[in-house]
Length: 454
Image (cartoon, rainbow, N blue to C red; front, side, top):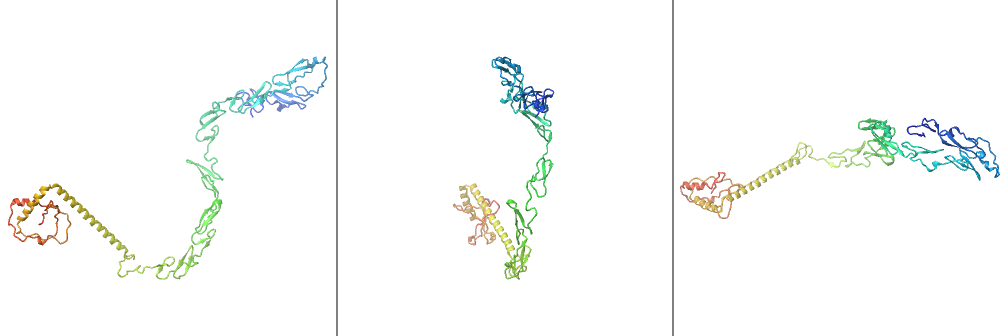
């Protein structure tokens, strides 16, 4: 792990200082403590040896010293042997001596280093180093400060390369990459094919994304489907292969074949399906019956039409030999259409006649109708009958579609009909009528200029 003693400097492992020329692991590099002494790094290029019993000196290389019992008179010279280690100050007292330890050391002889890192003062995943003057925190990336609690704004260093922006996060940063780029710093060209195709498939980029070209036996968008048992088309004679669960295959055979792969031809003539006692002949995927005269069909069950292909007596036949059915159907349809048209015309004319009659009655008041009836009867009696009467109309009844004139008080239509000879006058009428009477008579003419017959 790289040590970063000063912001902005990144030194090699175990080196620090402004110029990265200070050995932070002097004990590991030089191993200065001898005779089993324990070495502790105190500061850059500094260390402290804790010697085994009987050894002394900076590197524990002094020979063992003898421990003597001092008489009370000799205790006043206890500091002569320099019992306080690690730059500790010896003070003679009534018990012999006591040591005033330098900063970072403790114990009766100042031989034990103070463990300031035991309380984990460095935060955010940083590393704590024991120092003679205290401790030092080697901060993790993204953090700074004595105890690594200050967040570094990485965006100020311009780490994002091909990005539209940079966002500083707590303990890190995020680059918003431009299209086609990826990676923490947006410095890796993005490929839509990366890791897409499986099972050795070849990926090819396109405008719509990518396309996987699978190896033989594989399929799917990502070549994720393995080989199928049906790929080798194991079913014969047109059989359909279906892959079941577990990778097994099943053949659905065509008519006339059976077997696991439809390789066995079924004898459809056993038993004989042909009727009329004719022989059956097996064919590929089927059979054939040789029908006798007068029968046809797959199994010779249908009788042939005796009129087929010739003119039967007393029957209408179309050129194709279809019998009378075609012409009979055509004639029936035409008759139905003609009947429908006639019925529709009669109904329509009847409605128009009734409406016209109703309108005439509404236009003529009741008094005027009575006077007209009387004048009409008088005029009829004065008519000159010397002239020949018009010929009678045909005997067939005509539809009632004429104007009506009421001759009696109860309204009753007078329609064109066949004239009755019994109603012809037998007396000789007057030979002439006045012009005034003729004008009155003309008022009873029909609107369509047809005169009423009497």
